Length: 417
Image (cartoon, rainbow, N blue to C red):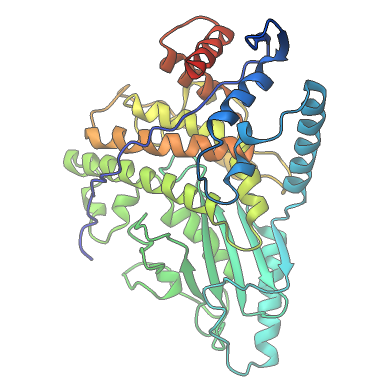
């Protein structure tokens, strides 16, 4: 295989208008001598909504933009917010790690029906289902089709300490009529991105266990012992690792060299950018039967992902520990309804970088800044904790360091002018 190319991306900065909504009250003089007292957020929302009246927005956008929605009282807002939070929590808790669905209309192998199968084939797949239901790591989710036993879809959460951390990566699997004599067929939802030497932009998954790569000393498919669970765990552990650059055959020998490590760091930078783009791809086009997982996962991890983006733009290595997380709780909950709690608890503690900051190509910060703005908007819509980042944007835009109320007031005044 040829060496993975480190590409520069020419994505321009998309300046998004973000607004901090103050919760204090303000008074508005309508010019006729009548003063109306409004809640600060309500008044600000109304003024912003007026600004968007003449814009031709795509269908459905109005429903997701907070300041274009109907203005309600504080009591109604509080009640509505609690109801939404309860509903979201229920969805997150109800999303099982393993479950059956009727069918997959968007599955990559949906049109590739298997030939006539035997009873042993059915029994073996049922055996794999039981293993998945019982032994799946907390960071992997699976859905199997009742009407098509040959189809399976899996979501894998990127492990901590890697350029894939907190990402969601989707795979479509088919048990062919030759299973288990031959390994299953696996397709990666790449979104057109080459995010790993073993994950191609055309969806190919290069793994010796799948028979898609042949190498000496590598584990190959064993019809008697190998399982679907083993395939998924191998993808997470062997492919989505700390230094994917060295996954490329022949590159492992450079792992301890200065030039090899430098190239691996650059590859991680590029990989994290791709991971952020994959997040946006999943948020905007979640695979069938996984929309609730996408929403709940990024609602929970959105703040940490944005904080990591800032951390990396300050010059820290991709995958390094965030200062605020060193003594914080482990990822996710103990139950199967959330993400990788068990995997995180079992993982070794990551140590801060020996070198506080690193030098990197300026295009990294330019591209990450653009992605940060897009992720901020998407996470905000999904209900993630983005207040800190929105407030920082307003303060930076207004050029003041006073309280949030003064910052919001200045932005309101600018709009009114």
